[in-house]
Image 1: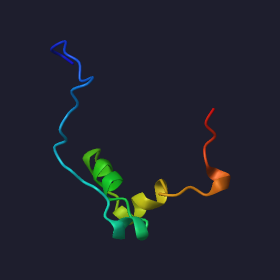
Image 2: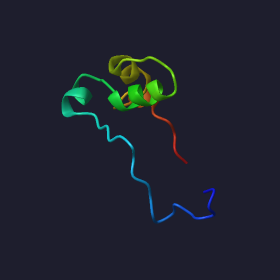
Image 3: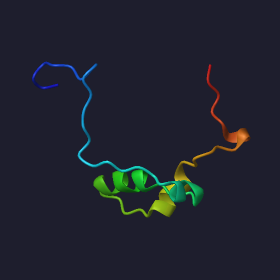
Image 4: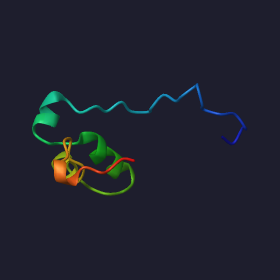
Length: 66
């Protein structure tokens, strides 16, 4: 941080609280990613965002963790 303090153990409070609803998850929408993209200047619907990072990865596409 600019003032030399750390966020470790303290955390931050988000300016906006956005959580996907059960209906969003069921319909593969990601309003959180869509809002983050919007803040970065990219127009994206929750449906488009839901196709980028699926809520459940197909087994053959699961990343390997060592």
